[in-house]
Image 1 (cartoon, rainbow, N blue to C red):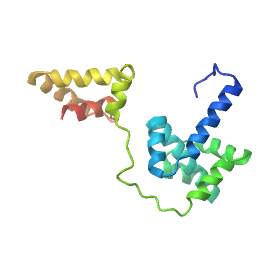
Image 2 (image 1 turned 135 degrees about the vertical axis):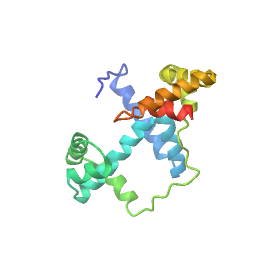
Image 3 (image 1 turned 135 degrees about the horizontal axis):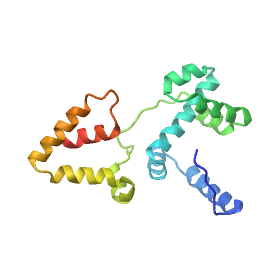
Length: 173
């Protein structure tokens, strides 16, 4: 995990955290929570938080590390960290699990998904390689596009497909 030092005092951090907790506690509907968390967290952060909650649920149910790892594709280290939090306190996990227990999980159409095009426009420096590739492909001549297609075809022979391959393949079609 990356080392991070806050430039704020503990008191200031505490106030900010409390304000975040107030904002969360005022959310009334799952759709509102989805909107808030989509704005607040990256896709990877949201996935990891959701997986930690599921890990806690499975640990409390009595599943083994191997069963959990197989079900939700996480490392033993992640499972172990959640287990430690459950041993130390874990009250937040237990409450969340108890409140959602038995509730039908149904994804509704009105729940927003993260629109990467908006994020790319907002943070172009982070996504510049992908943006450059997209623009190169969009402005390429037919001859250049055919050459790119041949390169992608060669990349198909690789055992593991990289993210770059997947993006190029998607863009070129």
